[in-house]
Image (cartoon, rainbow, N blue to C red; front, side):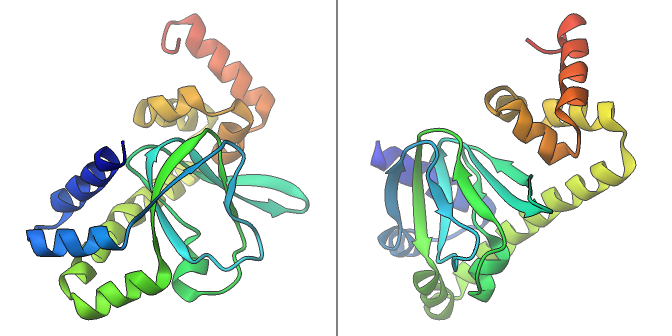
Length: 199
């Protein structure tokens, strides 16, 4: 199982940026496999994030608090990277928590090891840049969706783009992520099921 996770992650890197076998082996030496149960927090508010995670299996969400209310900022599944971005790259206390929504198997690299890779092997900087571009585009799409689409359009687009995440994530977290009330989301979901757009 570990070999499959390593292979899948390294394959995704090769798709992003051509790297030779030597660099693949060096990167692999810095990766650690971790199996954790549902409900585990990878990072909690106030902690300094010191690991970048790759989700081999499972579901992760990020959340923070506004006036005492939980707000889900993103949800990620297999093949995605999970980290508290600002805390990790600035090495300051996190303003968000990362919670496992399912039993999960993860690969991670520590902040010091990642910085050593960047310094000793310049090609890894290109990999980092390509990954940053990917997630900046996702972030931009979410911002535009929240600003430009109505409630129904936001939910329908989310279900189209991420059907697996939509099916596996509790409705309360999806509602929070989309900026909707649970009542509104339940109504929209009922409408989609009624017309056969959701199972």
